[in-house]
Length: 211
Length: 164
Image (cartoon, rainbow over all chains, first blue to last red; front, side, top):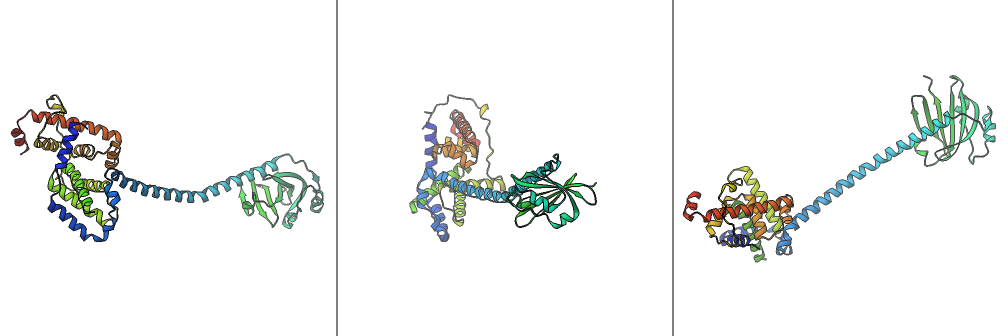
């Protein structure tokens, strides 16, 4: 410790509260008796460590606030992340359907009879059940095996009886990958897709826009 | 318990005195800070008391200009004598020299030299960086030495006359 430090220390050590003032402060402390229990001897006695302790207390409070803020943000972000993820999955599914539709159609089974095709596509382990409204609206051109959402699917090539536009109906077992889209419509520039499901099958109908 | 409280209040008073350099003001500061802490439900510690005193001091300064923390002597213009730590200075000389320092300079000197706080601890209390504290400490000590040297070169009566 330098002489300067000693000089300062001596100087300030000589400064002290007068006994009258000290008593005055302490008597006001008694008036605040309801708060007396907040004075903790252990913290008061530890003179050097005591100084950062209040800041540690504050920093703990800040950390707690920060933690809750972060947790709140995360909780708010989870649904957003799910929505974004679902959006990406839907985008992938549409792309896959459009790509399948655009591929040169090499039919595994050729025919216009829905019942016959259902019987001929024996490689799939699910019952192909073409909805009645599809049978009424479209002519069947043929069918082939394909994949959709990483599982085996059937693509039926259809011809709209009115517009003479080609459409594709995809049928695949209802799985967790496709379940979120089992009741939705997507209208693109060139194609419109319609998705629905029954208890066991997922359907995706892709139609070329007539514009 | 009473002795502990007395000791804590005396520490608080000395810190308040280092800020305002006036006994009456320092007494009021420590009294107000003590009451403020008691009315809040916070645990009383020396650090918290110092922090409360400091906040009150700044608040009072903002409300009025009674507390002059911006007195800045142009130390570089003073003649520089040999600064020697072994120099003996009177209490009056030190009192006068400290009165010429800014509150922030007295504060950092007090916390370091009297309370033995480290630069990091002072930085936490004053909400500044450790580097700022270290440079402030160095400059404050140098300034105080220069004032003391200059003071020693003058008759004490001349210095007292300047103050009045």
